Length: 217
Image (cartoon, rainbow, N blue to C red; front, top):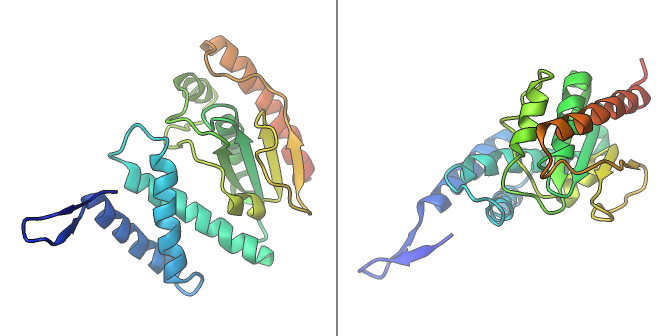
């Protein structure tokens, strides 16, 4: 975020900074009594910087920052007070958060409903979700067009009951008391829609098994 000095020597804070201040104020209202103003502001500006480092589209970054920060703060509260939520929390992580982890999160959200809080992240997130992945998921009635790649942060790992990785090696820190799985799946990047469908269907099967184990009826 840039700062420019006008002809009178005063510093003008650019519009992005002003939008982020407004974001912080909204989140302060949402998390009043749960988190300090300083913590919320820190997370807002840090989240913006994390997204800005990877995003090609800057116009919507403040809006995406609000969503990203809100989710991080909820994870922070859960990680600091595990008893605060009785809902299962699952995290899916792949390298770019533009294919496998987004598909897994989409299926888990659909099948798990309000029984599960689902997050996804990438160890090296791309700028956007693969169009073939969006198309393949839409074919099975799951709309992920509002999702976006997000960098992996520590608090979402600590808040999760289960962490599923897909080809990102040891990017995830290991904390006791969590279920960790590494799914060996082809990367849909660069594959045509037929190849993505094969990966999608394999992920669907694995999600059904995982959910039956995590939330047996």
